[in-house]
Image (cartoon, rainbow, N blue to C red; front, side, top):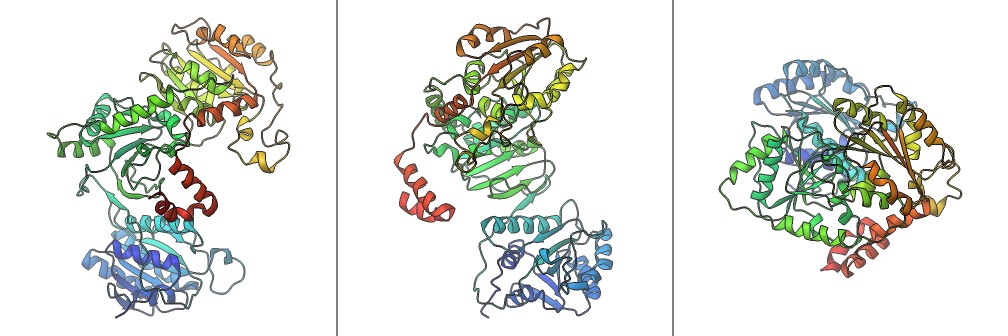
Length: 581
């Protein structure tokens, strides 16, 4: 029988993923809102469909069927109160841990509460009816398509996550009458791997990279496991500055990634994603496939290429795959290629104007070994992330919430744990004044040092990479919050710091900086904590970033690629590939 599916993309995606996950049993109840789903699956011989008019009975039928075959069973109903009749059986499924997938069809969410017939609010489910509830919206663009695909995968995987149980999908329809689609779209199936499951095969053909986002301290044993994996699989480790991984295969590659030139090192065939929130994920470019390792097992698809989530400690993952190639020869050609590119860019560092980037370029290799560095978000994180710090230095940043508040407070909390260890913090002026009350805290000790970059505004809004400069006049008034906090007063922070018992240093030029920076980075514990205030100008900040981003010019292929994308947008990807060939 020839298959014809609805033209509603979200429905197509759900059907395609049900097939990829091997879910074929459906109990359908009649109605108009679920026509596009039911009419599509009934024409596909893959599915085994049963009819039941009463939704309450239909849901109990699904419970009985799921318990007998120990496979997921899908429910489908129309809008209005039909879905409410699922609650008794879903409660049964919840407490008996039965894999029932309730697909309730609905009109657009925007119609809820607008006196439109048969539109009810399903945004909240009783706690003991389903393990998860997701909404699959109408697909209007590529972002919607990715989001629907991701949420459908999440819902399907939750049916068997840490034991079976019921799950809810709210499926939007626009009542399309077109059933002329002969094939379902290609969809990305995501699989979750538990420690007791079969692990997917890991091919050594092609480039394998690990990306580590923000991460707490790694043990020596964990570091050795990752280094061994890289040696056996010819892999490398790209990092967020706050990854705190200090193994042999670590690469601080943000400076290379900032260049407009193409770099095949950044495009692995397989990316193994580890760690949490990170502002440096763009170091990796277009990985073909992503495996994520996370003990919480959450489906987090940062690169839109996720295929497997390994719900386990990182050490368990690397132990497993290391054992498979225990006696194989080691290879570090990928690492050497990256190190060569890294050295080439870093050795051509330009003569930067006096700026945050200039200060970072002069201090990154002069911080005392074994100290801890806390970076504020945006400018401090970006500026210091371009330079390879000594492997003995741990780095932290409040990237979780990614706000300017609390950077110095976090530094204070960390410094209390190790009074004999130096703790450095780097903050901009807005972040400094936002959190300045903590500088008067009586627990601060002499191991506490602040580098304050004071340009009297949010310089981020003035940088050439921002659109604000093109479309908004006088952005200092509100967007970049200019001229607050003394407007670069040479004595405001000085008096505040000294009155609180700090040693105060300052510099407004390269000459002044060179004269006093050695005091700030002295490896000895001094009598007092320190604040080193650097006064910079926004024009110099802008120029420094331009120079950093253009150390290496793009090659011809990259220029062509960028030109086509500029004209056609992201949808010109296929044409770009053909032109580049």
